[in-house]
Amino acid sequence: MDNQASSVEPIIKVRGLDNAFNGFYVHQNLDLDVYPGDILGVVGGSGTGKSVLLRSIVGLRKPTAGSVEVLGQSMQDLNEKERRILGRNLGVLFQAGALYSSLTVLENIAFPLIEQLKLPRKEAEHIAMLKILLVGLPANAAPKYPAELSGGMVKRASLARALALDPKILFLDEPTAGLDPIGAAAFDQLMLTLRDALGLTMFLITHDLDTLYTACNRIAVLSNKRVLINDTIENVEKVDNPWIQEYFNGPRGRAAYSAHQALGV
Ligand SMILES: Nc1ncnc2c1ncn2[C@@H]1O[C@H](COP(=O)(O)OP(=O)(O)OP(=O)(O)O)[C@@H](O)[C@H]1O
Image (cartoon, rainbow, N blue to C red; front, side, top):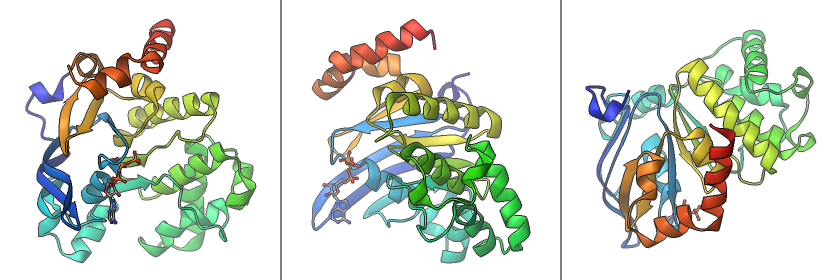
């Protein structure tokens, strides 16, 4: 079903967003809708403001102007406590992972459950173990420290931490960057599995064309301080814009498209 053609309300609604740094506008009058169950791929050239947009939506940055509505609540109308409560529904996987190096994987994932939900340690660690298994890590990863894990395992552990509080929306900033192609493909499949199993909506910043073809049902292209188009990949590819044409119809884009067709996914 195409949510945009139906009466389903967006789960994220951004209107007239401005973000400026020292008078330089990264976003100007930017609008974006994300619908429940979408895996939205957010793409654009370097510096087009993908990460700033993510930070504005999750409440880590106060926009210069405009409104951001998440799960039916206006971010700018919430006080700090209300924002913290809403924040539990928003899981974020930052590019660098952001695990505490002095805590084990299990302790890292249990941390938000103890700190924010005030769960007893034993219960928090029990839930943390379930999250470890949910993201496809072996149980023996639990007592390890982040430095003892491979890059792919760090991503999965960070994902488990982002899922600790059972969020409704997951934000991922370049989750497959730095992974080998096999690890990246496995991560793409994991995102689809989690979307289907947990009913998550995902806002996914990526430069990875394979991820866009495999995991995303919609693509938002940031260009010229705004969202140039937010549509299916088939429709985005047709847009007569130099960046889009070079990105999707250049050699790497064609290779990703062909691989996607060959796999029939
Ligand atoms: N805290 C800040 N202070 C000043 N300028 C900033 C700040 N955060 C971001 N910017 C600027 O905003 C612009 C957009 O940054 P952002 O990180 O969102 O880009 P991006 O699209 O995610 O880029 P990339 O694909 O390279 O990661 C950049 O020019 C950046 O220098």
